[in-house]
Image (cartoon, rainbow, N blue to C red):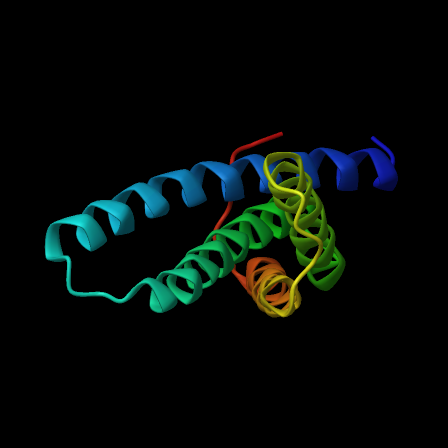
Length: 130
């Protein structure tokens, strides 16, 4: 398989992994926030950015494990793709343009995606997705 096809396939799997991880983590943190009731509304935005960053880290890691090279690029593409998807869904829901919080989310996603990609390439254990 060519390198471009392998990269596209691994980014697709990485984005799916990120999305599933984000859904699970957001559900867990939503239950914790609702049951505790102690968190102010301002902090929830930052908690959701942290959850998104953690999920992109997982997606970049899996993407780089599948691609077996170019971890930085894999993590970057995974983060950018997921950011575009999240931003598009957000813009469809509201008429709000990009805010400074969106730029913070983008920065966190890019850093964590690239970090996950680099760690995924350097991990020695095998992944059995072909």
